[in-house]
Each structure stands twice: as C-alpha cells, then as structure tokens.
Length: 270
Image 1 (cartoon, one colour):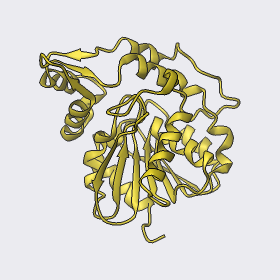
Image 2 (cartoon, helix red, strand yellow):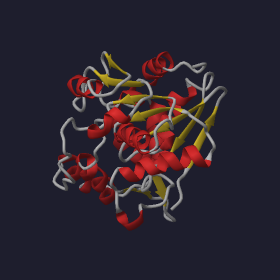
Image 3 (tube, one colour):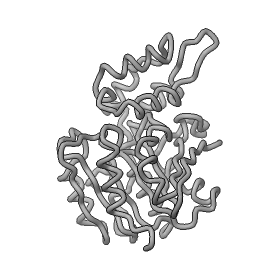
Image 4 (cartoon, one colour):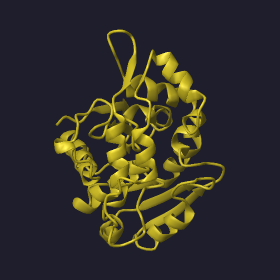
C-alpha cells in the first residue's frame, strides 16, 4: 500500500499535518502557507484518501492511520517532528504516539475524535455520519460543478476559497468525459466514521508524554470543550485551547487563527 505525501516546504523543524475523515493533504494548503516561515510542513493522504492506496482488506480501523503516520515520519527521516491533527487526524496522532512513544516533539490536536469512555464501544455502522456518508454524491459533471455544490452547502461553504478549491482539485479524479469522481468513495468514508468509536486512544492517554494542545472551536457541534477537558485530565502534559467563533472545521474556515494558535503552541527551538 502506498501513502501519498505533500511537502509544502519551509524552513525550520518538520511539522506533520494529519487531515480529517474524507479529506486529504491539500486541504492544509492555506494553513501550511502561514507556517512555512517557521516549519517544514509535510502532510499525508491517509489510506483510502486522496492519492494513497486503499486499506488492505478494506480495514479502516484508525490504528491503520497511526501506522500511516509512523511510516511517513520514518520514510522521510523526520526525526521527532511537531504534528497537527484535525478530527480523525488528531486521534490518529495520539494512536501513533501511543504505539511508538517519543515519535513526536509536540502535538496540536484540533477536536480529536476520542470518546472519553472505556472500554471503547466498538465499530458502529449506524453512526449518523457513517449513514450520511453512504448517501454522498460521488460524482459531478465537472470540477466547477463540484466546487459550486460544496460552496453552497454546509459545512464546506465555510471553508476559505483556497481550502475548498484544494479539497475539490485533489479530492476528485477526472474521468475521460470530464466528469469528476470522489477519490475517497462514500463506502470508505462511511467505514472510517464507523470506526470512530472502536479505537482505544482514551484508555492509553497516559502513555503520551509529549506536550499536547487540545484545541476546539467554541461554536463546534462536534467534540468541544467538555471532551477536551476530559482528555486533558488524562494527558500528563496538556493544555486546552478553545478558539472563539470557530466550529469543527476551524483549520479550513479560519486558517489564520488556527495557524497563529499552532505557532504559539510550538517552540521550534525546544
């Protein structure tokens, strides 16, 4: 299985960017551009997303995403990078650090999907996001048609134009007739969402010894302040950072604010 990587360049220590379910590396482009004066920014497409290969055996347990992250760090010889994760990407970074302690120098996690319950409930194919994903439209007559569709509907209508353009440009494959089709098909996205309740990151938070910033949007309808506080109580070196006015897709809707929070959380000289 191949894992696709986008290297945004930059000067300074490496910083790995891990995307949310259904997204890909290029949605980080607006935020990465704001950080390349401090870091070398590298993002990956998780298995089944973007230009990466599908998961072996169609197994989308999130431990596989952790292995993708570790493979990128090792394959690019990144040493001990900083890392930023959004949603599923945030949980996957915790799973990676738990599997291989001291891989990361510090983590900035924007609403990581970690249920504060143990033991984990297990996969849930009836998860409402999994159900919605199975109903997703998988193709459009053109990239412009796809862009216009997402620009007029929540939640992607809140993205800054460059993030939305990146989502469409890299997230769809062009067909011979000019139509475009999702690279991460609805059934894969649904399988990823179904496994959001099956990983055990919460039970093993004490294994994460690096500094962790737990960020969330104050206007989120997802994993907000109460969940971040529950994770904070178990993480040895963590800080909670609520961001006023932002929702679950803060990194794509307000990359300036989130990039400033990342820069404030990480000390490249540390």
